[in-house]
Image (cartoon, rainbow, N blue to C red; front, top):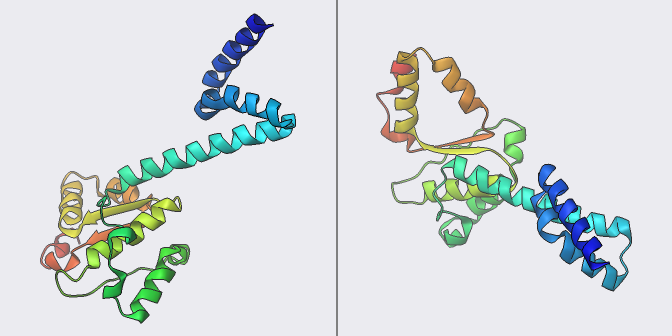
Length: 186
């Protein structure tokens, strides 16, 4: 009986690898033991495995989106002092964090003195959007303009713009510092 169980587990591991189900593969035996002990139905056992696989994929996607976003890792709401904001701005930030402005194709502009926390706040909103599964890119305006000028010079501006269009949100930092360069794109 034990040899048969080991053979089944080995075959199942191979199939799960073939099907690209790593979370299933890691935990099916543990979940099967738990299911036997708690008399779970076959369907409930499969649901538990599917839930673990889905959660693992969700976490992997968020990690990929965070890497691709180039968001500063430490600039989140956990590290931002919301007490610095007026109550009106704090309520607007809460609304913006839900991401519905993206569905309406609305833009956000943040103005303030240097060092007032604009970049940190926009980065924190960007992190929240990524946790919701949105594709975000954080980039300094000077770098964006340089990249677009190079793409124009190399006759690949349309391709560069199409690549930017794949993001749900572009967080363009320090727009005020690039006053003379944007006209060169036109």
